[in-house]
Length: 126
Image (tube, rainbow, N blue to C red):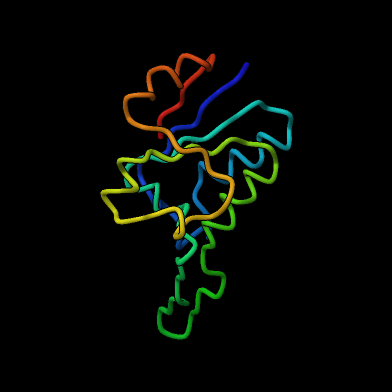
């Protein structure tokens, strides 16, 4: 079974958990032998930006010291052999160019997405 995780909503739960749930579960499932790839679309294309920095967050005396490092997490997926697709039109809408992005991404245009889906047994949209 080959599955594509389509991530379209960014930064869900990243303050509490320090990572995106779907990026995290993709790492874990790949480690367990699953055959997965990822498509970043919508606001989630920001995950591929190298220039992200999240400052520490404080609530009174409580400090959240482990800020999310989503671009590093996505680069880790690529390092595990997971293909990470990014939707070109969504990058352009956010003013992101190749120089802004981590290495190893696979670009896809919106018109190519149906054909991309056809190459997977399952497509999971998050």
